[in-house]
Image (cartoon, rainbow over all chains, first blue to last red; front, side, top):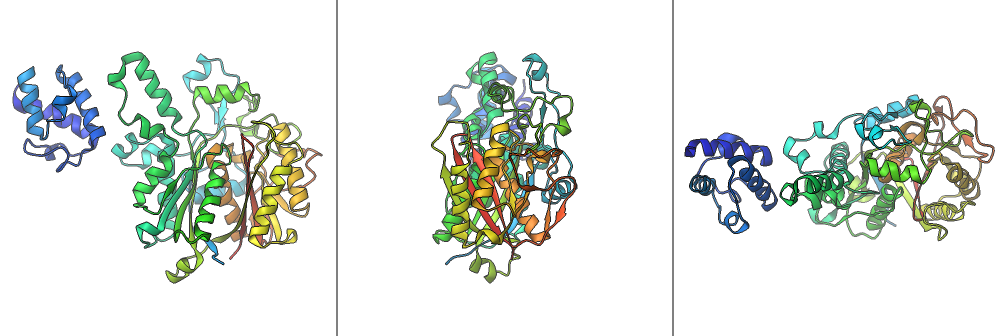
Length: 79
Length: 406
């Protein structure tokens, strides 16, 4: 799966959970500071990422996924 | 003495998605009660197959993400509170001088059941991290507090079917104590789920007139056989009168006095002579500075249970007298549990404002034990100065609110 495909899948999930327009969800954006996603929604996003991409997102990993790009890279290297 | 005025009204009920549609339907004597068509009614072979469901789905009235983060009981609270806030002209008030008091009887029942189903079927991974904020009974108050940015206190009285009225009583006390200038107060409920229907049915407190939903809720009627479970929300904006006057707000009525008491009798059965209920009504008149003769109208709690309606009638006769014009809105609305006292208080304010008392839907043959002038058939025009709303809840909670016209 390409990084573009991962970003697209992630953007769909973030839009579903947090209502942010998909074109706003770009690699450099911080989930908390820029996209204003709270810790509860981050848990929902993590579960959906696990289901969609078939990866595991342990809590210690989730805590370090600061930007959209971090999440894309993590999915890319674990799939 | 600090006076408390009503400056905004909001509601979503089985009769309509806002105050105007609800009040128009109440005045016209329409029923909001329908057959339950959910699969679980047949699945559990429930003896009760009717309910008073919301006329407008609240999820359709909110942004998608906000709707999915809120239980249905929180959704209705937000919708009614927004209407009330706009109706009040969106008061400019310091956040520290704005409070929210919204009660519920049950809280997020749909969330509790839905998430438990997910836990059972798919394990903890599928349980929403929003489960607790969606099921907690202070959720409706907290969500409205967030929506309005209130920082003067957010409270959530839980007093079963008196919760909404108790919220208004607490709001009145906060304003009278000078704690805040504006309170957004009322009740919210959305608990039409299998376990509540089954539980109430096992108490034998619900109507089983399943073949005639619109005729099922019959307060004060000799053939009444219990209440019909409903859902909805009613919210008022209450203000310190001087604060409202300074911002030239339109006043729709006054919350002039409140009375609360407890029966100390039984966990669910009302004290049959209505003594505790009467004490609440008397206290509402006393704190309002009203004589019995001043009160022209009582909006009764009357849920249509055989015992409760006659106990309340005794309380009204003793505490106010038999000169009052009475209506029982649950014939039309069903029983909105924690929202009932708030929605019915809205009706009380509108009756005072418009000089009209709505009919008691389905009251065809008055129980002789009631011995009161209960409006039936069609609405009655009455010139009113003061009116009382009664609310009672399992646990022996009694709340009476005295409203006066401006």
